[in-house]
Length: 327
Image (cartoon, rainbow, N blue to C red; front, top):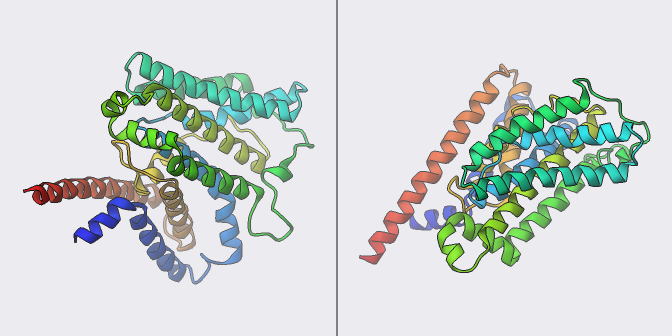
């Protein structure tokens, strides 16, 4: 039991991976082999980067001990800003840079207000959710602007080659995931993030600039959400003002399911990806199995609650074992 507990505490995402394998096997049978068909996997992999990038940003911020409920609105704000600027004649490269700066500014405001005025990030980012969504609708006039035909979609959302399983967006996602994982695991700043989320006061007493660390995580979370929104808009070909609605809570779910602790300090990029794959598999598997699609949110809710309860129980068991070991 103690060995299992140690493995779980060291790699909490492995529980999500085991569940993913089980669900794939079940849905593969229920769908008569369609789940793992080339075309179906192609569809799943086309959607995965957009949700996974948001989940990675949310996971890093949760490891740091904070939340961001504005990611769904930022998901819509960045591509809408880019579309409006493109229609005004601004080159795409410039609009991309400005769009990323807008996202970074949103994250900066979230972090500064939260830390400067000691407001729970849940409340700060809830306010930003409404602000960013309102700005998205205002600058669009309520209608999706037309995108130019000469956009470099080949660099972001086109398939890597004709008949390919993966889109270019998957390569962007893979690159960002590798960099984010290395950033968390191999750098001092990554250690600062975990220390800040797990032991905020102790981290500050050790000289770690906790406020700066949290603000950087807020900015990173917003930038990844905005970039993910751009990928979706380039794939769909239309910057709808309503995209990303409800995404803020759907992004927290894969983080928690992937083993990220709500209290901070624990979590991995790999876990966020596993959580996202779980959600996409459940969504796709229910459809292929001809189950009422309204059960999807029910399943995600149960899975999220189970993950939170399991993490809490394992944490208490770990502390109990440590106490017994010191006696």
